[in-house]
Amino acid sequence: MRVKGMQEEIDMKARIGTKSVWAGEKEFRVFGGTQVPVVLSVAYDYNDVDEWYDVAMGLKPGYTYNRMSNPTVRSLEEKVRLLEGAEAAIAFSSGMAAISSALYTFLRPGDRVVSVKDTYGGTNKIFTEFLPNINVQVTLCNTGNHEEIEAEIAKGCKVLYLESPTNPTLKITDIQRLAKAAKAVGALVLVDNTFATPINQNPIRLGVDLVIHSATKFLSGHADVLGGVVCGSAELMEKVYHYREINGATLDPWAAYLIIRGMKTLHLRVRQQAQSAMAIAKYLQKQPIIEVVNYPGLESHPHHDIAKRQMNGFGGILSVVLKGGMEAIKLLLPKLQYANRAGNLGAVETIYGPARTTSHVECTLEERKALGISEGLLRISVGIEDTEDLIADLAQALAYVETQMPVSLNNK
Image 1 (cartoon, rainbow, N blue to C red):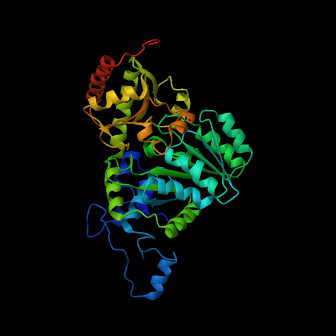
Image 2 (image 1 turned 90 degrees about the vertical axis):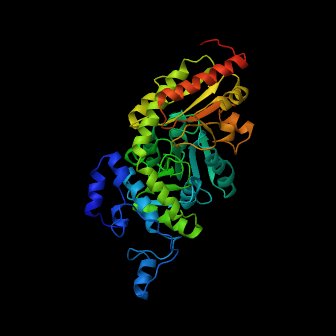
Image 3 (image 1 turned 120 degrees about the vertical axis):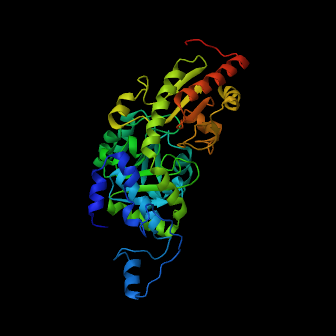
């Protein structure tokens, strides 16, 4: 791994907003440009065969073939690494490529994974379909039951996999507490930090080994590129890198450039999104048609105290359960003016979507019910629009639903 240079020392000391703009970029700029260039060359020319060999074997820094490494992609990896406080980072072609590669790098037939029931739907499918196919045992625990999770960890496992906040129910796990339990049995701890972002949560400081991001979401922030990143210790990331090198889920340099550009405003975007999400959550708590509001920033959230302790902010995602279920959602969504109805999150535009067409589209109705995901659950990814406009938009849409559909207002 590289020895820290002066610029890196400066980057490490900077505050998070400054890191978002500057970290990991200067050494990759060329010709006096102020931005990291998109290097599209697939291969790199060497006159000296011995130097070529040394670079290919990782004995010297450099580039040989884009499946292995690329200057634009390396700049993105450095930026995420520095924001998360990790020793190394590896970028992937999508968030799911990052998640699956991290798991398959370290798991072998006969190993055991402990996780929670409330992970993202694609991750849940890895646990319920793909890992069992290679004889990896998976135990999924109730997300909020820390005692149950600790008991399962104590039985022995190779990997503890957590997601906090969870998608789409916004449940919180005590990362530091569970990481300590995992270390006691020699397990690796992996955390999907997509919802929190490095702005609001740094799992490595809580004892986590590997942090995973779907860079498609908040890191990019503009809903125009796919990507994923895994970061952690240099020793572990060398193994993840080797898996990616051979299996080939490499991030395209143009995609890396777009994510780098998006990350420059990450701090500002997340701050506005969290501010609006809190205001919207408080507003929706007072609406008769809303049965449940899931947002860790609310004092009513069952694990608000844990979120307050381990997070720097509560994020830009909330979910609600509407009385009237899917019928109410179908009435509501077309009436929203400042909203994309889409299977994405973390963008500058506000995005609405029910779990059955977004986070858990891969799951059957029965599987969603087993995971505690109601058909009336609606995920809201808050954008950077003015808070007042978003609340006014919700107000008029909810008023329309109430006129079209008689809903019991008991206990409200």
